[in-house]
Length: 539
Image (cartoon, rainbow, N blue to C red; front, side, top):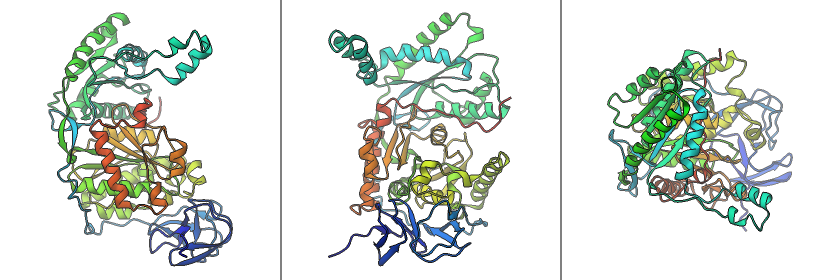
């Protein structure tokens, strides 16, 4: 009788293995033999495959992820008590390794149904976007949101509203009120979305300039048909700064962008009436834009992970990495961000850059970012969250090595700073924080028209203008949180599917979302998260 393996060694050079399920102390099966566990080990955690002395390196995914700070006999459970973060030093680019792209024969002629824009980009959604240049306008944005959503929302009443009505009126007389379904409307081909934020004034000039670039990127994003922009008038982020950011992205922008400055428009009522009338005219025109076939090369795919666990690097992230490689081979633009979660794999990424200039830019952004973190008493080594550590990611390098799997193996064609826009096909690196929402916000501002978000612990994160597909690393979590998970890669952990098969299934799901035939769970929940990265200080 063949025993099912309960531990997995990811890379031939690794000296640790991952528990695939909760394991008791004692003898366990691993590929090529058995291992005596010194103590009970929970699923997703790591154990040593050899005896390690103090100072010995710990290797996982074929890279250095830590150092032993206590003697670790073979079969010992790794923890924050006996291991510390350690990553390998980085040298100059040694030349791009030969890349073997996946077979794309089944995908080269595939299309998705998207919204074609005048600049050649293709959207996966058709959105009229409202946002402020400064937080002082958040209330007016909220009023406009209430006004438009009363007419444009096409969904049944919120279940919490139903519960509250039943509590207020009882299950008898209030039932008719509770079962009200919001009205449909003839403008079903366009969505109206709203952003608010706490920036635009009170910080250093760098903050306003960064926010201007980000908001300009949201207007440029192919999922946006047009925008309504509110300004107070006296804030740091002046209208001319926003217009300059738009001009740098696209001096010949053909999208309608309506800008209103409250201090020049009289009363709030007068301003809002004007905004409603003129915005509605733009929304009606956007509604007439049809979906048409587009090649998969028009996809700009944000690669995100959050609430990561010890399975992230062996199931969901490699599956997404396979998708990234297929898309890169087809001429699409996958985007890998979260620079603190690339710590420890820099040399591999440097070597994958298409030229020395790209590699140098990557390292310059990494080093500048870490220098800022160190200046405020932090560092990349402090990146793992309590949830990450609890579920097996005990060092930043260990977390990074698994996180980087989202980017596959393709050459890196461009390296972008926060607020830069994706223009190159192939894998793009984008400097963002590891914070889930700040990173997702940044990728969409750089042009991502779909985001795939892998998670081992679960997260509801979404985005106002780009669909966010949530991918579970394990079936236990997927079944516990079915309202937020779109795709489950737990079959990889159970050995039922390989990475290529899982990647093919994930790509098919992406195409259906891009075509509008599947609505993501985050969009169903109205999860419109938007947090700009604030690099400066408040004054």
